[in-house]
Amino acid sequence: MIIIGWKDFRTSIKECDLKSVDYIISIDETGTPTLKNLSPDSPNHQRWFTISGCILKLTELNANADKVTQFKDKYWKNGIYNDHRVYLHSRDIRRRQGPFRMGLEIHSEFIEDLNLMIKDLDFSICSASIDKYAHFNQYVYPQPVYQLALLFLLERIAIFLNKTSSNAVILLECRGWKEDNELLSQVVNILQTGTSYYQPSDMKCIAGVYFEHKLTSEKLKSYWPFELADIISYRINRYSISKQKNDTFTVLEPKIIGYPSHIYGRGIKIFPS
Image (cartoon, rainbow, N blue to C red; front, top):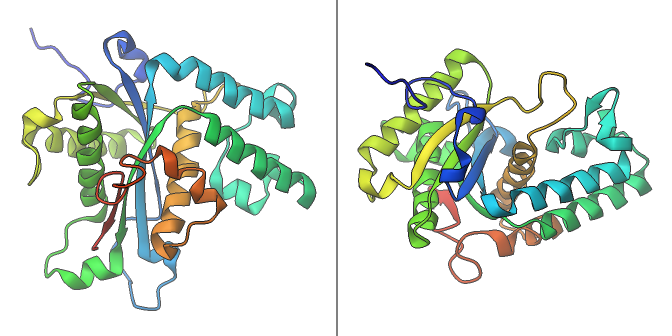
């Protein structure tokens, strides 16, 4: 009898026995991984790629969800806009479009409250950013950007989990059946073969990789860990580029693995360094 599981094809988080794990880790990225058409003059949003993970403890998941719900309910009745659950998408927030089409004063208050909510949530952060132009010029055969950033991220997740003798499942957003299964194959390959620094046994703390759509089919509920990962990834991407700590970064900083003395190399990987 052949048993098919999460390693074989895209599987919903609903199929996971969450009682058997300590953490859920939502992952999202900012930028595109392509190495085509890069130059010293490429704008930063084309030159840099960032992937980030939000490490959420299962015992705090409901409390965190309540805080996200309360935040949305403050600005939209029952958290609904145009018959859809409001989805906190970083780009829409910055561009003040869709549900975030607010007056400047209200939008400013919204951003302040968003920062306060993030500060109040109980979670940890790890991230990897790649300067694609520098990467392309440093190596004769540069590794694929997404795969390399993913490897860096999984190493940081393993460091965190092994240090606390914990385990976790990874949650990824559904994009398409083919794309999702290709991504799953990449993750499983890293977990099964290890990396230059970590053996496969070190990666066993990652107990599964699951996928979900950002909104439920009736669009009245959202998977808020994706929203959190999207916002965090963009903010760390901006920091990786500028190296400047503004308000949107400092609210994250205490949650980054290795804070306060060992953020770099542990919680945040910037490559090439």
